[in-house]
Amino acid sequence: MNELAALTDEQRSKLLGTRRRVVESIGKNMDLYGITLSIGHLYGNMYFNQGPVTLDEMSETMGMSKTSMSTGMRTLHDLKMINKVWGKGSRKDLYEVEPDWHQNFADFFSIKWRKAVEQNMNVMTRTLKDIAGMMEQYESDDDFMQVLRNDKEKIEDALSYYRWLDRLIDSFESGEIYELIPKEQ
Image (cartoon, rainbow, N blue to C red):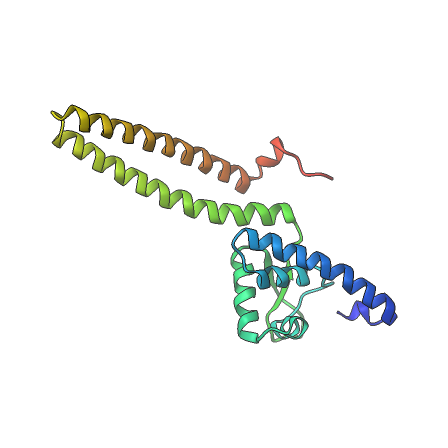
């Protein structure tokens, strides 16, 4: 953080206090979405950096072990919230924040939702096959057939929702969502 070197102690203290508030808020927000508080703090600290940083620099800034820092960086990289960049004369990996919060949101939720949609659709489809088999086997049992028809209808409704969610994810990935809800300029 060499941009802080030219500041007075008072300026630096005030600035770091305001940044700390934002970093805390980012950490808490990410924690709501299943990302650990420390990884949220890592992203928040990186957000204020003026350029790419190494694992060592972030480890020192945050007082975290290099192993924890590496795990955090990998998580943020997998979520497309930071990028690995090339730095002239540097042998160490450098990382910088993806500053587009709209894209961060879209990538994060697309990754998480896509996985959930695929899992749930597979379960629902298998269950419908099982129900179809039971309907053949117990077609003469009117009471059981009614229960099976009710379950089938509920599962078909759930599949309809997951197909809609899949289209919503597509709209995030393609950017079409911003035609419906434009980004502020």
